[in-house]
Image (tube, rainbow, N blue to C red; front, top):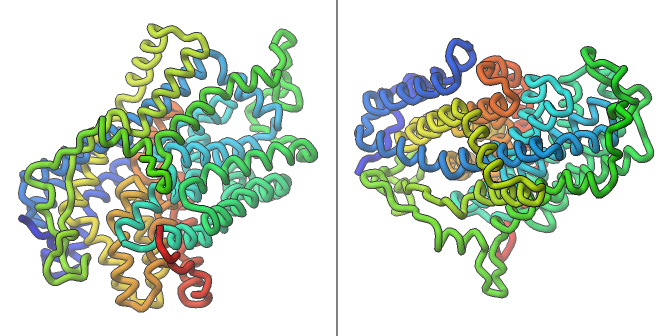
Length: 570
């Protein structure tokens, strides 16, 4: 047994600085551009291990076990998912269907501003709702590159767009996890998040276009931005408050896409905005090639081209469908977990690390205060398997033979080896900081701000959690209960501050090292991760502070706007 220590020096600023050292090393090396992402991640992992052993006195065997848990989680929950998603995209490209998808978007509008919002924001949100983790950035960024966007710009746009939907990603996983960790009503948490993030959903389409061009060109397409963002925000609020938490992203994304398509049948921007480097002579006003031999875009050809992503939606939904309790029907994922998964306890780590009183609120550890550590061996129930199945079915339906698909998969994996190495190292680093208590040390520093400022700093704590772990779900596991305890101590609403953790956290998604690596790999910009981090950092901080201001208003001006627990909870 080993109990986490949160102030080894008896000086909390110094202890906090040491806890932050691994992250400072990782992000500093990444931003410097002097090392590749995987090399920077390895240095960060080495620093975390050294600090955990020498400063926080974590037994070396536990450090090694933490690395093992992180690697197993990365393999099945993240790496497998991202590889499968990019594999599906590569099949669509190899069969020529991706060109038809691009042409169908170009037919709607050749205006690059509208294309960016439809693909990065709406389509990306749909993938986030279905698969989550790195899949939305990987697929939507590759989509934009295929449309003719510069790779670096495509990566940046998709990182910024992959924010407001994240709290309900992967069929509501972050919100559900937050509820389990805090023992707060999941519907109240979802409803409160649905009263915070719609403001950002309305803003982000304008924000995306402003990163591409000036204010005048941004407001020149305000009807499209308002309709797409407003539809997404309205459905996001209504569904999270009055229907449920599982399908918020999927319904909002589809609604915003449909609204955008309908609007473009009646309204077009006065001047079609294109990039300065683009040639106008080889395209018509809708962005379509002028080549007379190009086959016409019939409804059947467009439907066939989008079929891989329709299959992706279907398989992921089946994998993630919750149990139908009145009928006693087990969820598909639960059944698969029971029959095809292995989650053995990690020897020497599982329930051997106790959280300290500052985090738990208990002077003596209770059973739930011991950290669980299992190896996540889920080859079938992993969402990545659902995505991989969609890729295989798509290939077969598009006439791709098994040998060709195997070759495409091998090429996909080979191209992503540096990104895979970086993700393994980053997740190992994240789990070392988690089990050693270094993450909690950073979080505790935010709780010293008092009740007046804590709504803002508590929101930034969620942001920090995602920036550290690369996952809103992981941030909720890490800091969710701490938010609840601190809120009660300071006389704040625990539901509001728990929701602030997940809603503030989503704005940290664009700067977490894992997302940066995935975006760079998907767009062929490997080696420019540091530039990408520097480019999106201020966007991340600014959007997180906006969320913090909204939470502060709910805490001190309009507390009646926070959702109340549903009784009975379900």
